[in-house]
Length: 162
Image (cartoon, rainbow, N blue to C red; front, side, top):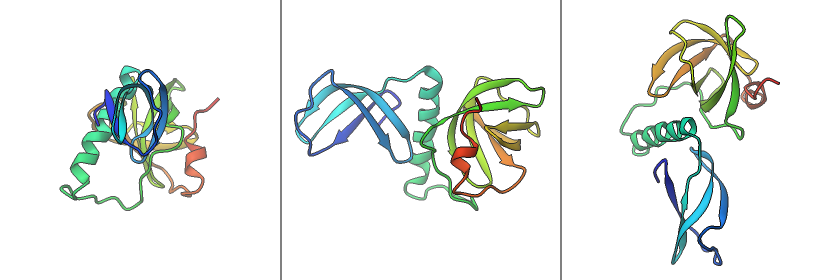
């Protein structure tokens, strides 16, 4: 897997080059694009995504590679996951809003990628949840929520504000 293409091993037959695929992949979210190669036992799909989403996917792949064999310590207190809808609204302290891509979320915080990167310590809201920027990383930043959120409700709370 790369941020440009993914190979799927599948018993399904009948796939053809050019056929559109939409797949929800654990740890990486929704991937979509055309089949570019068919092979015995699977196919290769080109990932069609805007530049910002592709950067977010690259960061997820990098994180996964570091953690898949426990090569890096995961000191997180709360389980993180990728929401079904990875898009949200970032609200800055001055009321400015912009779309953002949720890389992962937990009861205590969220990692996002956006066109703006607020300074560390800046109060922000992601969806309806308020917090402060606590760190920067390649292509994004982390927000620690002001209050611990209920794990069952967090996905709805960080959904885009309309």
